[in-house]
Amino acid sequence: MAVTVPRARTGVPLLGPGFVAAIAYVDPGNVATSTAAGARYGSTLLWVVVATTGMAGLVQYLAAKLGLVTGKSLTEVMRDRLSTPARLAYWAQAEVVAITTGLAEVLGGAIALNLLFGLPLLAGGLITGVVSTVLLILRDQAGQRIFEHVVIALLAVIGVGFVAGMFAAPPTDADILSGVTPGFAGADSWLIVAMFGATVMPHAVYLHSALAKDRGPRTSPDGLTRMLRTTRTDVTIAMTVAGAINLALLLLAGSLAGSSDVDSLTGTHQAIAGGLGDDFALLFAIGLLASGLASTAVGTHAGAEVMAGLLVRTVPMAARRLITLVPAIALLSLTGDPTRTLIGSQVVLAFGLPFALVPLIALTARRDVMGTRVNHRATTAAAWAIAAVAVGLDAVLLWALVG
View 1 (tube, rainbow, N blue to C red):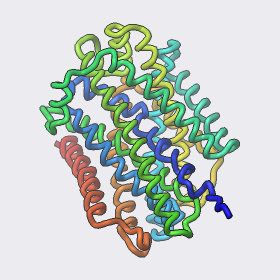
View 2: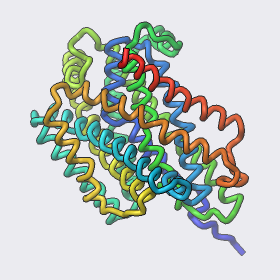
View 3: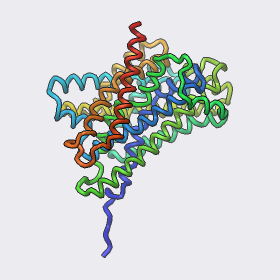
View 4: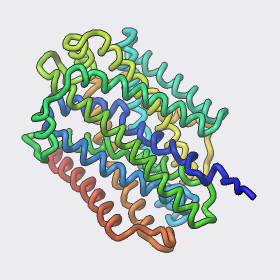
């Protein structure tokens, strides 16, 4: 008698959450920091993108692993272990992260619409907020899988938009080899912190654990093993794509440096048009718009999961969108330098990162939480090293600011 293997056990449903989380790594904040790094220092900071992408891959896998093994998101597991005052304080900092994330993403969409159609930033921000809300309503109406497919399609648009220019102006082997060798060469400490905050995103950690928690049965040890293996594949492919996009942006900005003010998204767009042609500039602007729309929807989804996990409050996605959209629009109307505001938002995210990393690492290293799926000691050591880097970079920036 033939045995039918349930679809939930094939691993197919697990391909997708990693790509949704990966949107956070190609959002407008990443675009701004990668192009700024390339414009100022050429390929010197290429190694930062490589290193942080690898770090992000491990962090995202641990987040998904926690959800798969426990059947709970990171914030739900923390809710069970925190006192009420601590839980509320933790939620407050997570909301600051969500609002800051929303600012970067709405601002990126607004800049893209300005480049494409000449719309004022405020009008572009409102349109970005409305369209992203439609994407979230789609998730509520059509289901999580359809939402994931839409996000993956937008990721493909982002990839084409941002990578095409690099093929028209390919970097030299010498540039790549020099860039993957660690070194700072006088780089601004705040830019290094911004690159780290833009690449290892705190809200993606919360979201990925929530996306993975209800993926397939956990009753069979063999089934869980297959799910974890598929999740590693999902995360590896998704983070490789995101890392390649950021590398392409940095190298492209480095190759165009000097042709105009590449140290801004508008300047990068103009430099691409002048150096490579209007078609490539159009692709860049379309990629930036897709980045803003997709990341705004994903960021709002993450904020909703954090609220549901810590406060046990379920808010409709459209209402949740307003929570982060209103502050973003208010700040958008006040900003004088959109690109610098984008990069500054990534610095704020870097300060929020330890609040996601430390509990994630601690929980996945506990046998009473993970059972036999507890982290290997080497995995835990590597994860704590990443957390130490995050805290260390934050400390360096604080010292620089105070000094």
